[in-house]
Image (cartoon, rainbow, N blue to C red):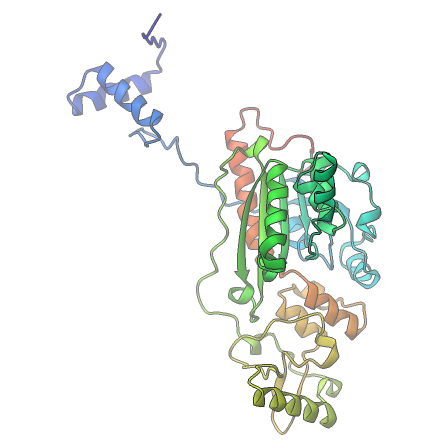
Length: 399
């Protein structure tokens, strides 16, 4: 047919629309159709009776999918993933006290050391979630491979780190979506090299990587910046999936006083000795021009970041008290400060020391939920563009 293009059996609705539009533009049918096709071909958005170029991800409440929870801690990622319809098919956490909390909250004990778990033994899944530790990478192994003429890549470069175990599972199981979380400093760790290697490894595995530092202070009364990393398998979602990180909720910001208990055991009040020590310590560093010292919290504002070392002296977040020394937060208040729902606040099954460690290391569920909701919307987008109605590759989870 050469350069000719023949289209038969055009639906009546489309034919009528073409006829109406060409008359308004004073064009022939051929001129109008070619103009519309040229706009589409050059990446412009043609004037059509529908929106074919951009599909706004839908807002969803629940969608069935399977996920695994690695470096699970006490389930900061699991809570929102389950809330939005996910079924956890595997979990891993090495700390025995975190395992105890996880068992009390979710009814199962996570597997232990991830370095001893074979990727082949992990069930197929749609979403891999991991709050992995930050570690530097050694270039010795890569340099040796180069000198011997052996093949190497960014996945090889991560050997000996815990991220390598995550990357190995990703390579073996190819989950359509990967959710990672880490401290803000991941991007500057080891002069930026750690993040460069991680991102390159994920991209080498054919994932599109999105990352953003999010401050939890819009969701909870705590300044807590963490980097969230969301990765999509390009073989399923293409090279440019329309993902966007959530915007902070509008309205009044959370206040510290709103999460405080009305009655608190006197044991959380600092002793005279500890309070004097913290004040003297702060004065010494102030004299040297340093900013180290305790943090006396503003009850109508937000706190500093709750850390895993809070059990030592509580110095980063102290609650002022009239007529007596300031006090630490209680473990229940720490759960509230991190945004855990009441059912978890009321089910703390470990000692205060371990509870402080766990909440200080945890992911803020409300922030994770905001991110996961954006991911779930993209899953719905994937459903709408997949002709056979099949969302993901292998896993089928009952709703």
